[in-house]
Length: 243
Ligand SMILES: *[C@@H]1O[C@H](CO)[C@@H](O)[C@H](O)[C@H]1NC(C)=O
Ligand SMILES: *[C@@H]1O[C@H](CO)[C@@H](O)[C@H](O)[C@H]1NC(C)=O
Ligand SMILES: *[C@@H]1O[C@H](CO)[C@@H](O)[C@H](O)[C@H]1NC(C)=O
Ligand SMILES: *[C@@H]1O[C@H](CO)[C@@H](O)[C@H](O)[C@H]1NC(C)=O
Ligand SMILES: *[C@@H]1O[C@H](CO)[C@@H](O)[C@H](O)[C@H]1NC(C)=O
Ligand SMILES: *[C@@H]1O[C@H](CO)[C@@H](O)[C@H](O)[C@H]1NC(C)=O
Image (cartoon, rainbow, N blue to C red; front, side, top):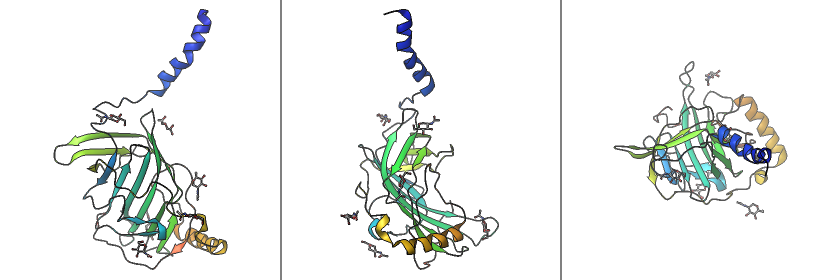
């Protein structure tokens, strides 16, 4: 083999290793594995049974806001989130969002995590100041977390820190269990068959007028279409923490 041929063989490897800056999963990066169930704050939000009932697109509201992530050893994830967003200019306009999704995740060599949902995710938005104050829509966003690490807190134990697509950190989450607490890791409802076309169009228009801009949790990729299951206003647990 000539020197030039050798160079051609090696060159791709050299550029890849220079550009990729592969993450090193040492104990500084993660003192334990990511597998299991994690929950923020007072840990009332937990994935699995007791948060989302995908078959009828309902939620059981936790006592306080927060978020929970679960990861299996074979590449499945589930997310449960309950968030309230205050509004500085209109203090009475507190928007509440319950969000649930699951699918498959990958730990990328550049240190990020990508999460690709099954198409059965959904969320409920309660906005007392909007024309439609309470609706449920599909949630089908692919999410990118640019970085993560796990450290040990002296009192709370193992803590998972995720960084969103824009680099902003999520609240740290404590490890609730090393075996994940999750709903079955497969699509749990049929998305497109849930309403007739004409109904769906009308509701989409209504919801678009009501909500204006898209609501998301910082994912990448397309937003879920609106299914348009309108539900009665149930009132928010305003005592919950504002995130
Ligand atoms: C950190 O995470 C990596 C990737 O999942 C895993 O291979 C490694 O065992 C973890 N480190 C510790 C100390 O558990
Ligand atoms: C949805 O299903 C769950 C369990 O299957 C049930 O407990 C709940 O009452 C149902 N909710 C609605 C709004 O139908
Ligand atoms: C705050 O509420 C007002 C009135 O409903 C609305 O116009 C505005 O967009 C809201 N701001 C945010 C940040 O949600
Ligand atoms: C890391 O890899 C993921 C998946 O390939 C990609 O979407 C993301 O943009 C990469 N991040 C950086 C900083 O290159
Ligand atoms: C979706 O619909 C198909 C055909 O009607 C049915 O066989 C399947 O069980 C449904 N899946 C779910 C998750 O409900
Ligand atoms: C969900 O998102 C994927 C990827 O963006 C897309 O291919 C798929 O059609 C979406 N499904 C629904 C039901 O919106």
